[in-house]
Image (cartoon, rainbow, N blue to C red):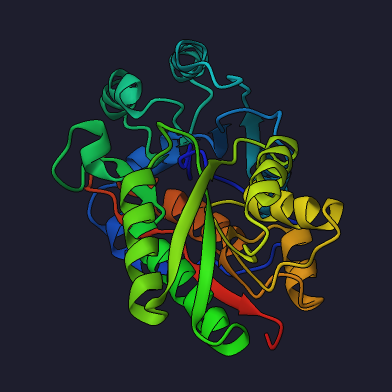
Length: 324
């Protein structure tokens, strides 16, 4: 996920899907891969960006719970956003013989290429966040599955939802503040371009008049509060992340005002509560529970033939409104 990007990355609290891909991949065990599968331990190495963000800590607990229910041990690492530390930790565990599969949210995808090659040489299947091209590949690779957020689709949905709100609540006209993610975040350019284009297409009378960078909730609230002082007519916010959306709500409340239209990309629990309460019009919510199960299930299936090409998965997204 993402940087996503660490994008991004929301807590996962429920588990319970069946192994979706085992049946479709069972033929691999009949093609000579059973020996490799038997030699690999049922131990998953999970290396997220860091365990400091609550969402990633929640994800690690979700992985341990789901994998544990399938009889797997999980080794959780904490590189704390340090790519060198991440590669060092992964090298150590891959060399130890303990790893049966690896799930990596790469701090810096290019730095993981040597790890990928090491895992391939040992026949240990990996699932990494991002597209193949972020790692210098042009497509699927032996023993490696890529799992990424479709930021263009997410941006398009975000812009469309704000446009729908502007049309429904503001007569089709609005000055819009765009709370954007930090520079260097995966998918930033394609996401923002898609969001802006979709907003313009859906509500041509709206205009993005101000942008802020939402690194965290407190900073976003302060920056948006400063914007509101100079723009008394602004009442629509399009946020690239949960921090921006929640910071916007705080800024409007502190100013004694109410935002008429706020849309969000991410969909953590607090955001969804605000959607239900009508304070946020819509959230384009990343479905990390579904992604967790598809990711783990894919790795289990890959153990049957770790030399075969992996898959390219996409993190599911769902538009959530007050109506459901």
